[in-house]
Image (cartoon, rainbow, N blue to C red; front, side, top):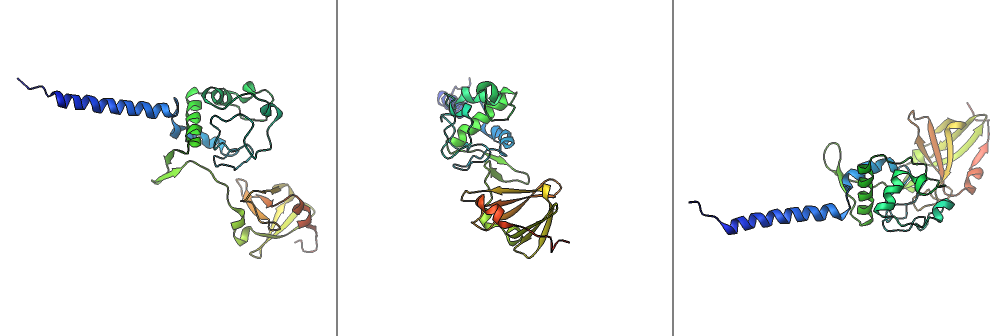
Length: 243
């Protein structure tokens, strides 16, 4: 008769129990969603939201949004009146409703996001935001191997290379001529050139605007200034050197 090893059986049972418990704790830590999948889904939000603390874009930073009252992120000044007066805190239930339909949850919000239809997608994004707030943003595998952190950061415009440092701007007819520190003159149709400001610590130095390319065809660009008052002072109306 084969001898029954109670201690061995107990070890296996204990190991299985520990594994199941660990999995359960891990799964429950960030709710029903998967933070890694949520990180991937969140890429669609990165055009408007950063997960870096204090870095505000079209929308506020979501770095510490978990259990934070809606409409009160420090330093963000573009909340709609509807959001300012919303009496809710961002948690599982409120975020699920918000991600499902922002307008339905807070009528009059300036948020143009149409919402996520799939419940699992919403849960994944919620898990991701909770992980970010906990200081544990997930990693995802990138093409070619290796891992990358699912955060997005703005470029430091003070470190722009000479070809991006604007030294002069002239306007003639429907054309802007932008001279850069590498000695080149770049001509752009006025409709394809935008003037912007960035007063953050990653923006350009005062009096030293930076040109940034944009557009899928490479035919558009933005010139970023440190302050609004610099824009008109920097542009001269001159056609003598137009070609």
